[in-house]
Image 1: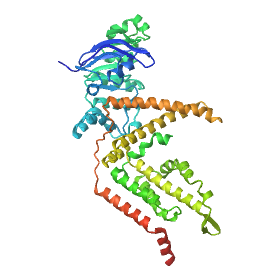
Image 2 (image 1 turned 45 degrees about the horizontal axis):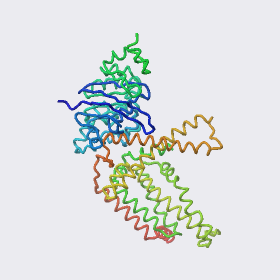
Image 3 (image 1 turned 135 degrees about the horizontal axis):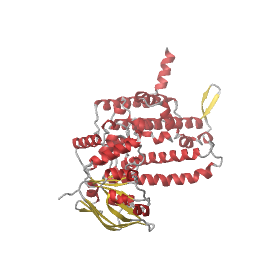
Image 4 (image 1 turned 90 degrees about the horizontal axis):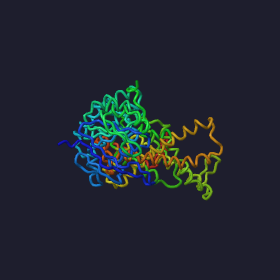
Length: 243
Length: 262
């Protein structure tokens, strides 16, 4: 049985000021599945991402990552299995050089030096950024930063990849490269984004989040064909589907 | 502000000074600071040979003098404040240069300023020629308490974040102030500082989350192992010896004596 699944049951979260960001969300991602998580601003996407990695703890419900239930005791194990690519790559790159940043996770996993070097080289090659290894992270372009941020997560060999707005701030060429990269991955993927065209290209399945609840969960083209649903959830049909 | 935001750039160089083990540079810097600060309150001329160290390190490392001076001068207000009242309290004339009577207060003020600038410039050069993560790894190997070193790492990290946020805010402010800084600056800057703190805290929270997501447990690990080589040992020995001679022998006096004999 595969351990690369992610199952969320009745997930709830309320911010300290009482705002309910998640009001009982349930879904399951199977091994290798690529799922788009879409919704208007404030729908609960970013809160969901933080909750999935134990960066905030839900006030109700369960998160099961490949048989491990997320709790304060298992948060380390869950973070080993889930790779989280943040919305702003600037937040994700905090070491002086690209090499050190990609090595940060594997070193924290307690790997030996040859293993860490191998992981770093593999991850950078995977995103086409091996030539950037010795560059300072703050001197990279937006697209390079995004590629390196993804490499920092890939180097930890996660079972599940979750990404918050991976295409934000990228030029059309960078966005196209990213889509190619995301399509090539065989990880279980959950991609939160406003870029519905990207979802159409990468994710066969889409979950629509609206006011902290799942408004739709199904085949991407079917979901995006429902004009009334998109209107109600303050979304627009992707340009690739417009007649 | 821009210098602070990109402060780590110089530290990534590859000069012979950059390649030295951080522990060797730490030890020499500490020896330098101890030697310089141990002089008497009226000593000024005997401090002059110590200028060689920052000049030599800046030259060998390729770090620009302007870069060192800008950061050293940032400490000037604190340094001047320390010795500010000496000329008022100590009015005894201790030396005459030509017809000019110099009081003990002015001599001690000058001595404090020279010693402080030398010490600060050495510390600045240490940071500019050493990657901060390797410097901290070196401090850990030198058995400094882990809590202290981690605090230092975060302080360095957050200074960069704070400077980056401040840079963005100042730009936004300048773009909407018709090219003029307002005269009632405090009215504008006071709320900006509060906002800056909140923005920097937000940013710091996001960075900390990114670190935790990659299993950060309170210790920043670096791969490149520190290796103390013969050149590091020689670096300590050479500069240590030089500081020792300059501290206990009156080098300027000897040199001027020699020049007088000839």
